[in-house]
Image 1: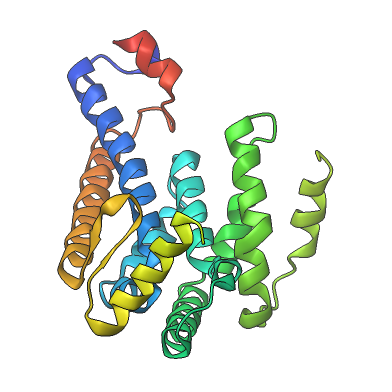
Image 2: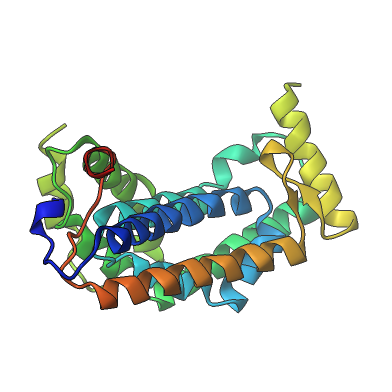
Length: 165
Length: 71
């Protein structure tokens, strides 16, 4: 791929670019830890317009970046199943409230539309991309669709993607 | 009770008394540390966007294979 570069784009710049891209994906994955304390972290995600940043990254040129974002958003929405342990009702209520607000903000940022349009970019022969499609389908759309009352037709892309299973 | 469950309970307990808790891997989650992490993300995103704008002809994706052959 290096040979595709024009002469004035030096190798050094390429390394900086590659570094930056890896850094970006790593930083996104680093956000996963925030799902362990929604009542603290989710309001901060909204306040600091991190959700807006993440939703922009859903249409990043590098599809690996989009997949990382989807994985993080999925982690955030996956709160219910971990609540089997008995916890303080007040804490549970605060967590629920935080998740709900985060969902509202996701809908506001157009995450549903961006995730759906992102589906078309995944190459189903690539294992990482298949994982991306799986993540997209399993949680993000499930959680967001009923809330968004979206007029967008979600079924066709989903049905198409089911075929490779 | 598994250690993971204990850890989850600890996180929940701490969150009611103060706004700090120990997350997975022992990493401290506090108002300040989270803000710092979010700011850092913005920095990384901006830097990446700058490089993308500067070198629009670079390939859309680099994977580990590309890296190992280019170094």
